Amino acid sequence: MPLLEHAAPNEGASANLPVCVAALYKFVLFEDCTKIQKDLIELCHAHGVKGTLILAREGINGTIAGSDEAMGRVLSQIKQLPGCANIEVKFSRAQSRPFRRMKVRIKREIVTMGEPNIDPLVNAGHYVSPQDWNALISEPGVILIDTRNNYEVAVGSFAGAINPQTRAFREFPAWFRAERDRLLGEGTPPKVAMFCTGGIRCEKSTAFLAAEGLEEVYHLQGGILKYLETIPPEQSLWEGECFVFDQRVAVGHGLELGKHGLCYACRRPVSEVDRLSPLFEEGASCPACHSERTDEQRAGYRERHRQEKLAGERGDEHIGAVLASQHQQDSRG
Image (cartoon, rainbow, N blue to C red; front, side, top):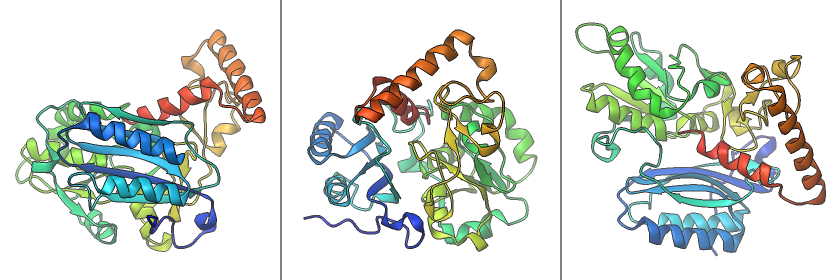
C-alpha cells in the first residue's frame, strides 16, 4: 500500500482533518497525454479522488483531494510518469471534500499564457526557496510582482508587491510589455522576483521575462502555499490570506483555513467586511458583482442557491454546484 508522506502541516488545528488536499504541477515533456489521461481518470475514480488535473505536452497541473490512502495511490502513479519522480506537491487538510467531481483534461498549456514560444523547461528563471525569499525581496531595488489575478491579490499578498490587476493570467504578457520601460528604467535591469499560489504561474512568467531578454528573474519555489506552510508567522512578510481554487476559498499561515467566503454568483472571494455590505446577499450577490448583474440574474442565482442547499440536505450533488466548482478550477488561466 503506498504511503502518503508529509500530507499536512506539522502543527495547527487542521493537522487532524480527514481530507488530504494536494496541489501539484510539473513542467515536463509528455508524448502521449491521451494515455496518461485515461489511466489517471480510471485510478482517481476507483479510489474516490476528486478535483482537476490538466495535461499538456508541457506537463501536468492540478489540485486533487481524497483520503490519505487514496491520495497515496494516485500520487504514486503520478510520480511514475516520465520526468515526474521529483514532482513537488503542496499538501493541506480539509474537513470535507473541496471538489464535487474528478476531471482530467488535455489542453495546449497546463497554465494558459498564450505565448507559444515560452518553454519553462529551457528558459525558466531562478528558483528561490521559501527560506531565502525574505532576503531576496528585501534587497533594495528588487521589483516584486504578484502574477495572480486581481481578485486573488485582493485577499492577500507580499508587502510592497506590484499588482498587475489582470483578470486572467493570459493578460500578463501584454501588461509587462506595456509597463516594461516604467518598471525597469534605463541601464542595467534590476532583479525581478515573482510569485503565485503554487509556483506554476510565476515559473512560466520568469520564462517569459527571460525570453524578453531579462537575466535576473527569480520565482518563489512552491509558491505562496509552500511559503505559508514553511515560514513561521513571526518571520513572514505575507499580509492577509491566500486565495485557493476550491471550496476552502482561502488559507493562512500553516495552511489553516482562512476567514474568506465565496460569492456563489460571481465566484469571487468575500471578506468579513464584504458580508456586512448591503450589496451582499448569500448566494445572489456581493459588492464586487452587484453592479455587474441584473435583478433577473440575481433572482436566478437565488433559486440556484436554494436548490443547492436542498440538494445538500438530501446528500445529493446539484448540477449548479458541480459546474460552479469546475468554473472555479478553470478560472486561474
